[in-house]
Figure 1: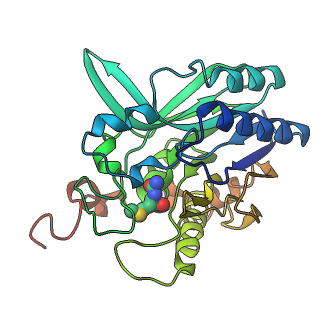
Figure 2: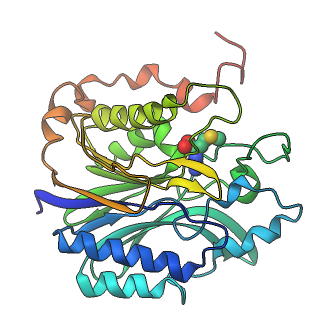
Figure 3: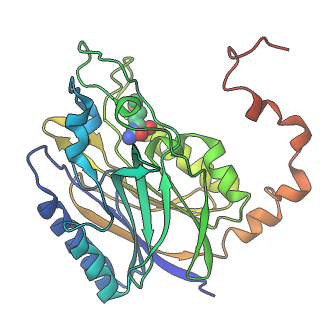
Length: 313
Ligand code: CDT
């Protein structure tokens, strides 16, 4: 069983509306090769990695956004990435917009796949926490229309065994919610992969700019420590057609420390030798769930979404 896993976060610089899939896949392959050259066995790419972050745009006909969705994975444009990863024997996480047909119904999800070193899809995750709004807010500098273009994921928070260890996936806004980590941690998660697209401005409320990066790292470092898990986090960075994305891709140890971090707002690979046994002492001591969790007092967490959802006690 693997003790050390050299894992990479492969950050993408801006992807513009005019950029086609082939050029983006070419950039992903470049980073995959770089990571492989550095000895990495797992590479994490961002959320919606194949296109610009299109939910910032409103189209009167929502179906116009269908051009950003993948109907198959791999499809003709993503097959070269799968083939190269298989040739190199590197596993990867890829975020993409998924258009699927289930029982005659078309569905739209914000998804990620985990592809094993043999090129097979080991697992799929569909984003549960969709931020933003569904209505047209033309007065905003840019919108965040995930609630318009995607449905809430219907697969829960599964975990998968890869390299003999337990791995979880989530997508962007999921990383801000403690429940995301805890559900997977209760299934034994040892490493969590997350891709994200975070604007560098809070369009809903004026806020000091530095808070965007602070909150990004704060939530993931807390999630890593409180669950004794590694987190490999990969961002989009820089200005996509003028709209800034924060970047800050990083690898976080189960101690909550950031051990590797991207320095640029461009395509950049960062990697680390993750000691997958490091979380064990945290799970045996301060976060020994079996010894210390008090589930008899946690019922409200699954009964209420918030304090205003029901009368207070
Ligand atoms: N892509 C994504 O989930 N982005 C959100 C932005 C929230 S602002 C509406 C994030 O949590 O980073």
